[in-house]
Length: 426
Image (cartoon, rainbow, N blue to C red; front, top):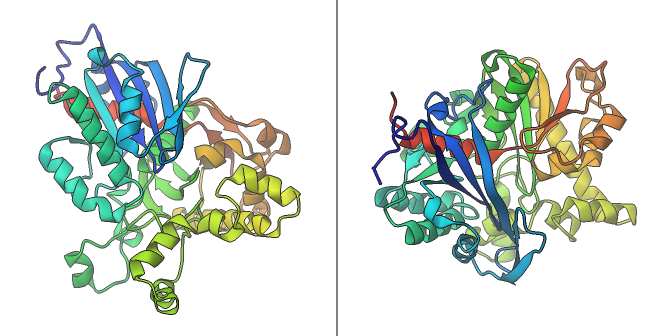
């Protein structure tokens, strides 16, 4: 096929795009039919989409979860769920390819967590791009390697016939002002080693902001929003005028909120201290902070909020402590970002925890009436698992700072950005 997608040649036909969204232990996939011309005018992740709704429809979707153990495959339209041992993301991708009609795919979009300083826009995947992503893997060791494994598996299946695009979580935060992106390090040292706060979950934060603007009919460039992407990985973002001005994750996805297995904010001296005290290399301590900390480390039980809530009800003190830390840290960042934005027009919850844990949302917002953030108990309790692109109000009518839950649609944004990258401007 042609090196780029031609809007003119496909203006009366749908373009079929496969989206592959790699997580640390999962692989979500979705096949869309998309009208190409409707995407040629979409904005980039630097300024998320507002009121325009491109024409796209889902052909098939699904996910492989539990990668690294006995994984589970779910595919839309199928009631049965399959299980098999899956060692890594490359195996998961090959299993997934068995489920779809590969012959109809015209383009593939991949979510990649870390784009560093080079990739501030979606990029057509080439050998040189893959090599650069491999060099960036040390900055996102839990995420970039899985994405690369899926990219390699897809290239093995499609070869060079089907173009592929990498869409980066860091891109949405790439234009943060220096006050949000810089660390207080010696300037020459930071520049020499490309040390800065890159931010992550950018695709999700862009989706939350864009969906809110589209549904409310308010111009995105006039809004101040605090978005909360809460899942196994968690981050907050302060968004002004559709652009990220600050976010909780930093040079790597380790900084910020308490997460499923990541510590979030911690004194950097802890790394050297534990290295000396435990007689291990700093890399080992870093691994502990990424894989053995957070909700799992504090509770000693699980990184799953559902299990911790049940354990808390049964009197498990460490589970209660983990949940308290989790909610406190989110509330702390909401307060900080209200200061950064000089107030906000809305607080928006997304992600697996943000969309499915009313109790956690209530605990985060408790005590925030001082800034006008007050939840309606009934609305909050019933706002559970919104559909992708759906927005549910959870704040009281009297609240001056409204709160919403939005079903994050990362795959739709990846599909749009993929087509934008491959379609030449008219």
